[in-house]
Image (cartoon, rainbow, N blue to C red; front, side, top):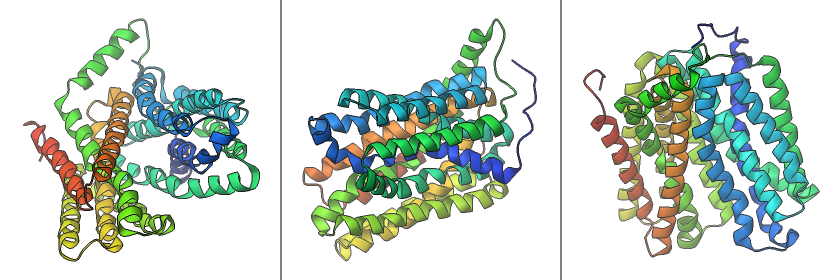
Length: 404
């Protein structure tokens, strides 16, 4: 293991913006393409299920790729993995733009996801390299805001590009953006991992560090708390469209407007976390996030049962659930990747994989329940359920050496 000290870091604001840009590459590549999906059945003379693979396999690759990228950055350093991943995303975006067949496009999307996922997992590890646990939580509260802003803006931009210039222009735009991020990273991103593994015994050391992480009770405490504490968001995206459009009778445009409350709440929570995490510590912020979520979802159940199924009842409590998510997520991630700083990249990758894969399963589950005659109450009730699971993991996996 090297004994080097992290290279000089650029001024905080500029460096923070770079980390936000890196974090946004995955969400932008995912969401900007969605408006163009319906027309591709005609363009490639195929069926909707095959075209849907450009989305579902992207998500699968984005989640599973993090399991590889994190450990690679522990062994070889953050900088080479970031540069290699963003370069792959850029090349794959150009390849997607020139796709002659749906199979080519699907393969390009898989490669794009593997590369774009680098920004998500490595940016978290970089923050942990530079700051102690509580300060890292505060910084992550700002960096992870990209995970919310990108899904809000990217579909609108993608729809505009598709309408005016055609679907290929979407991938040209992503190519240009990732190329800019790549050049920026090459010029301004230092190596921040002073503990990267090197030498003849590097494989043995790598395995020892990762095995210690994978058998650490505290790591699972924070990683699983993070996974289920933020799961209400996936319940919302899996169940809200059906309830709002098919049960309440609102339009998809109305759904889009009301959904912004969720994004707004998450950004508010992130901002609060960036200000208060250092002062109060990760445990207080995690408990506050879960508690606020449980209060808001319980209020939603009461209102739906007494007042009726109104769209405002569905989304206003979600504003406060999302504030709770914004408090919980950066603090639980910071705690998870601080358990063994030598394996922060692996911890970031595993945590990201658990969040995305579990979230996808939960979104599919609530959708199945609603399609098979589950009523609107199913959504807040499932939110309560996953938050209680988070609470069980948070308290059930603590050990005597930890605070409550």
